[in-house]
Length: 146
Image (tube, rainbow, N blue to C red; front, side, top):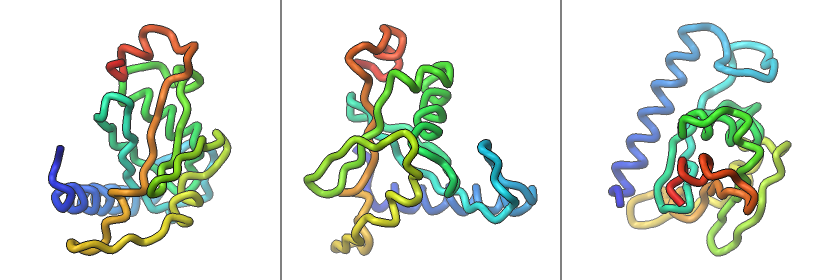
């Protein structure tokens, strides 16, 4: 597994780079009709059942459905394959299914700040997981290595 401190620095660097790119282009990165260039991009790890993860770049208007669509693109699947996946939120020892219409930024705002020996370690205990539905086709299962 990757060094958590390295991961935190990598996420910060990727977020800063995405924010700089969005600011220089003067527009949002997104779909779903955002109203200008003020959206700050944030990168989240979406954990998969095989213990790997994919990093997905989001903006504040990204719903869980949009995150799953972006994840599918990262997995070289069609966007509509997202209908075969479910997003879960894990906060400490609690896990819940995220509704497709929920905004990712609103969920993350509710996460507690968890301080550890290396500073903010929230991402160790608060994260998203994507899992296939039991009816998912073989290509979706293969893409997430189940």
